[in-house]
Amino acid sequence: MKTRPEADFSSPLCQPYEVRQGEHGVLLMHGFAGSAAHMRPLAEGLVQQGFGVRTINLPGHAQTEEDMGRADWQSWLQAVKQACLEMMGELRVFTVCGLSMGGVLALMAAEQMKVDGCGAISAPMAVKNRFLHLAGPASLFIKRISWGDPGNRASLVDPAYDFGYPGFPTAKGADLNRLIRLARQNLFNLTCPILCVQSDADETIWKGSADCILEGVGSEVRQKLWLSGMPHVCTLSRELPAIVDAVDAFMDRVEAEKEG
Image 1: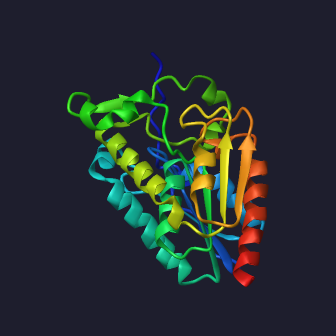
Image 2: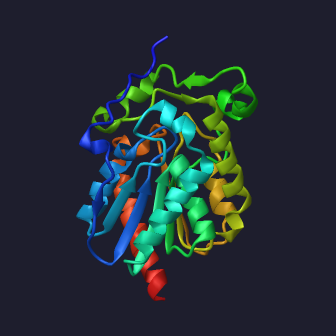
Image 3: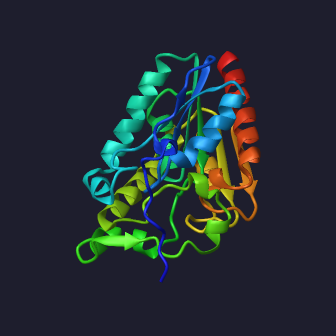
């Protein structure tokens, strides 16, 4: 069976990216086993719209799978919260936004901190992968899981930015599940404006994830962008311009709510 090739994380695209400009900044987080490269096109699009941006690599990511095995959900969440605190201290308006697990971490940051806006892109409230469901007990017998053949996904994402691990330590799936459970059970604590982006063809997450989030939060401003035929890592898809436009318009709404 074909597997995804090893990634060379020495590429500058995999490194954290930051542009300081304007009074409204956004922190962008990649997903489980991904890298900052997955958020780079969105970050550059938002820079063109006049927003400040910062991408990060979560602990254990963009290094080796062994490094990922030494990180855990607490370290991922702490890294996000620390980055939030640093940016919030410098900006008048601050939005947190993430892809997949990064979207779950964005939800948790918004539940626990006074951010002005939250964007959740392909953020799971449940996953389809059966191995991820059983990651805790399975890790006693299976130490690593490969993502396997990317199939049609490979033709739908921009390969120039698709840097991630071809697999992951099985035990880390339990950390992902823990984050999903915590975020989902505390959605009511999220009261800032929120935008959810999801595709009807997402091969990774439960189809009802975006609606679950929007129905569970306490926010008055709730927006959704529903994509058609796009993969899970939709930030690398041909719908990137639509995502940039949606986030741009959403952040304008965040600013209006801040002023109001």
